[in-house]
Image (tube, rainbow, N blue to C red; front, side, top):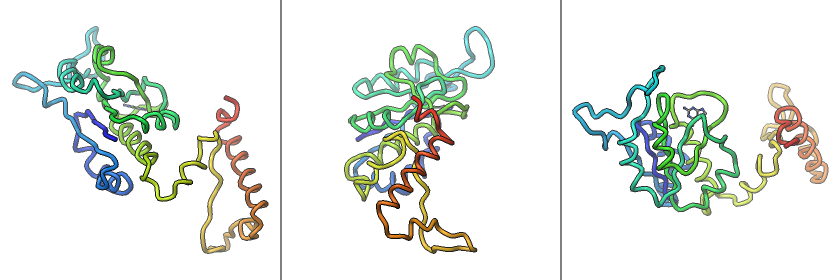
Length: 221
Ligand code: 6GU
């Protein structure tokens, strides 16, 4: 699978794409990431990529020409614009992307991009959630990491992406490992009982309780 990342700050991606799981997946040839800087397509002595908004207002808008020249050759890919005005990213979206051959991620900065870019060169707009960041770069990394772990051959244990949070609309139960007691803080007895039916019943109850307390929307929707 290939990602094209369009960003005014390609340096942003250096270490996150090199380390850990995604770094290994790239070295193994499972996933490829190309970084594209719209400034490479900027014209004029100042190589300008942003300008003041028509109609006035604060901040700057990413200009149509450098983005058009960057995105037009990528019409064969699924082009996603990362913006707080998009649909919130969820597991179903990551699953969908993981079945595509090539996905392009446009990272907005400043007040966003000229809307003509969205109209002519974007297939889908995605947000990380209801809060404001400085740009789409963190969201692009979230998409790459969330998709990479779904790719066949990426996870050591194939069962581990099956039973996780959100697929079944429940949060995960708490986990413990050795020692059984630390500073007097004990692991719940049931987990040491060896009674697998009781353990599964306890885990199920924990998932339900947590979801009810923290994410009632997952149950009600
Ligand atoms: Cl994709 N971009 C920015 N700038 N802020 C965000 C976001 C994206 N998702 C949530 N907040």
